[in-house]
Length: 337
Image (tube, rainbow, N blue to C red; front, side, top):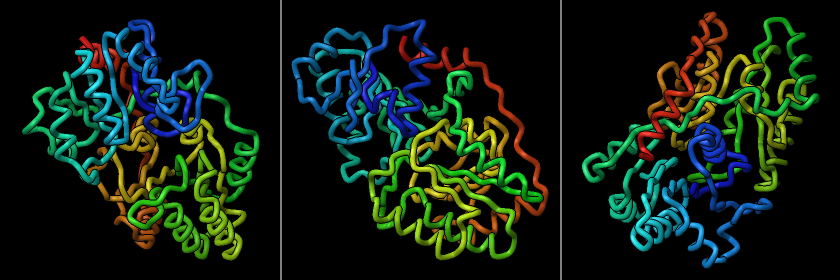
């Protein structure tokens, strides 16, 4: 049983669950408890508040793997799955738990589980003295490109048009939605636009494609960004794509991948880009994977400097990291066993 966002949803955790399920589909009969706001046909959603169904699913499972982003839901599942039903219970924490208000509660309950997986070193250091069954495993699982949907023709046409420019530099970034954190744009779209304003003022060959998978949140903020693009004559150089797509395939068509978040867990986007040998520029909010070029968090000038450096110094791309799917499969199989 995998508990968390549906594998059909958008977002890094959903992608991780989708790839984990594909990785293990020949070894396990996998069911899901979906916590998302969107309900998918044939999949039990916790927001139905059907506790009888919830208890039935938990009772019929041998192994429970919890991926909840919510502290309260994480604790609820641990209590029900491990303490009440006595199931083998594994928890993966994908977020930066230092920002949770009740970290002591998280520490108390994850100790009850059979295994705790964290995705970055910062979280590992928090739990290493209190949780015996602790594992540090980045959330990245290699994508199966053949399973990825084709990119929209509008996207492909826009990229082809950009490539007509001499020495064009195409940058991509993404957000599940326009969320705010600590009073700032969590995914840093505002920073990216400020950087583009400076870059395009010096050279016209910089292009940014920013994907907002769910454009229903913060519509007013999205309109502010569109006005910014228009008022600074960036329409030819910036495209905000307001829908989900295969970001993996978009990465493969780009030159630089940006990750301008002001908080992070383990960014799937970064590891995907490095896997395919792309140049990655990211904020310095946490320790990033080797090969990532850092800029100062919430500093558009620092972001511009990083972009200019990698595009004027002819910095070589990272080498593709080819890792066997069997390595990832055996890693999780050993945890479950």
